[in-house]
Image (cartoon, rainbow, N blue to C red; front, top):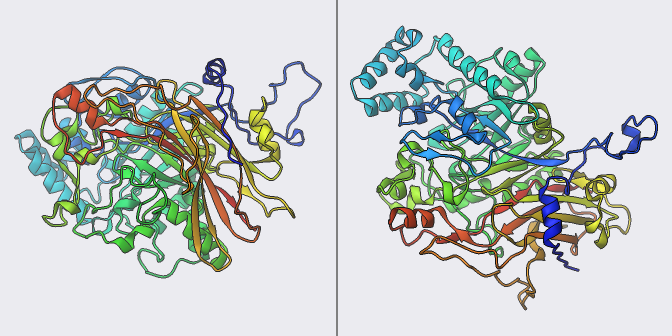
Length: 634
């Protein structure tokens, strides 16, 4: 039975205070030392009591493809902005977040890290190199584009222009880690150390963000592994293992941009040897890459309409045209590019080789190259500095991807298609590097496309419909089930998995349209299946003869770039019991929570700058969240 619950405004207010929806790691008294009886029931609470929102993928002027194309803001400004301070953008605009983030990973590209700041300061170490003198001279004589082209040509050819000058990279890396230490405030704001490994074989995207659990002391024992070292993820994993062995620290990687990989991100074969994925590969991939960045500025990667034709909410911010090289995108690449299809294929791999290589949780982040982690539609500063807010032509029509794929515009992605997305939502015990990293490692995370809606889900075999309304929702959920990112063991005889779900709107954002459960499974014939179930929704809508729920409506005023919360619901809760469960079939479940329509950033721009977006640009969008899956294994 499908159910939906709406709470009164007073309850919403309480939940927004940050304590209503807690998750748990280990609730069992056997795993805690309680000592004597105490009046307060919260003394030994060992589970997360709130969700933390942040960005695991932000670039500053230390990334050469940002610093040499106009970004003048370094890591310091990035952290200040993320903490809620006003910052002047590289184009001279005042910028500020509506609310501070809880954490930030400055993930500058490893490839010639800090080149632009070194040119700006006439760094002596840089000027000792032939290439350094070349680009320094070009920039200082007003030929910045020529300097950038000189660098990008070497980078794309995997010809490191600073090879043999490790001290240059080490100096800039240690500056980044020093700034992270300066802005890290445990309990208040976490400046998490990281960088981006920018693998791009033939211009196809295989990028990973490398996230450290550790502070400066351990991170400084290495310098970032770059695509000059190797473009093969397996070599990155070896470097990560060596880091942990050398330092005693911990590190994980988050892939992103599979929609720009031309089928390489979730391929059936290894990159270098082209051997079919085997058990060892699958084990290593899941050891080092527990998460996937499913949504960001360069498009949403949850699902594709061609792969999920019965899901009316696919086609959201889709980039499926080309990559950064000359390759041409074809339809057969899609199954190896999108998260839902990879999660399904992972079930088949687990049956065939014993390990699931695509058993990942999901986060969102920005990939902004402006040093400004802006993710709301009304405050979007663009992908790169030349695309910061303005009435200029490039704000909408600059080619962002597919430049080398020919003249056909259908192979290109333009600036107007860039998404104001996304955020990583992490359920953790504290706002510290260690607690946040641990939550990422155990996949207790979800992705949003830019807003801060709160979502949590538990799956188990003994939940009942009224359990969704329990005051001890989280503790009960953990005692009797597993959270997002968890695993359900084989079902007891006669039992069926059931999910308890709560979703709360962004305090400063839009109401909710619906909660859905996305199920993928491997059927008895060995075929992969999927189905999307509407579990809870706003209003008194009824499903039609086709089983579909009518649209929630749309209050967006395009001319005024406004909307109202007169439709939708501020809080939705749902209890769902799998109506198609077969205890012999491998499956996963994840929750998708969808907001009511709101104006897209292009609509806000059109009002403010009196510009005209292309007719293909959506006037409104429905922001959403995707939780990490819960897996069922017979």
